[in-house]
Length: 157
Image (cartoon, rainbow, N blue to C red):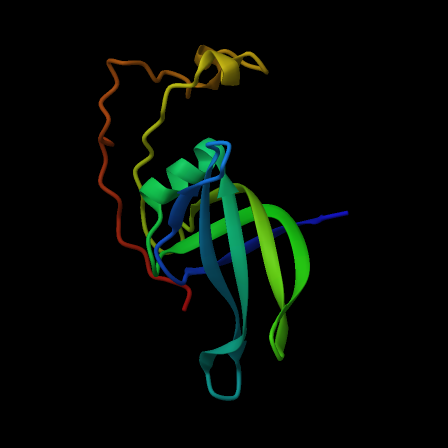
C-alpha cells in the first residue's frame, strides 16, 4: 500500500525529462521540504530539518512540469509516497519517492500565469467534456493575460 502525501518545498535542480521504452513521458525532480517555526526567544523564524523527496511525474502532467517548473521554485506536490531502501557497494540508504498526481507552484511565494491545453478525445472520453472542464466564462475571446495587476505581498518568512 502506498500512502498519499502532500509536500511543499523547493525544487533542487531543473526537472529531467525522458521517455520510458513504451514512449510514456516521465519527469524526475528532487524537492527539499524544510520545516520552519517561529522561535519566540530569538524573535525570528528558524529552519528545522530538511527532507528530500524524489518526485516522478508521468504522461501529460510530466510534460507540463518540464515546461513550467525550474530549479529553486517553490512547489506543492501531491502523490503516492513509497519508501525505498537502496544499496550501492558498501553504501546504503533510504529514499522517499513520490509518484505525483498533482504539482503546482506555491502561490504564497509568487505568481504564475496558467495556460490551459486542449484535451484529446481519449482524455475526454473518461469524464467531462472540454466545455465542462473550462473555467466559467472562459472562451477563445478571453484575453490570455490577466486584466489586473497583482499587488506585491510579504512572504511569511
